[in-house]
Image (cartoon, rainbow, N blue to C red; front, side):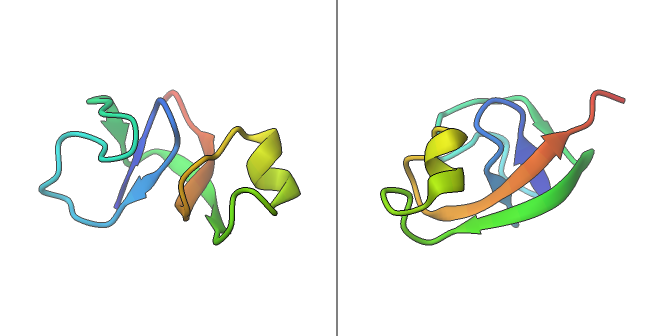
Length: 64
């Protein structure tokens, strides 16, 4: 699984090279923690992280 460095959406398909959420192309396997947001409008954490689309998100993207 890879996470988008821009919006932190976790992509399960390893063959994907562009984030379907933000169109970002910087993906990484180096992330820690996961957050599943079902309803971004009702999720306080989702609002805090500016998540607009339901999905699985990385909590932290590691640089190295």
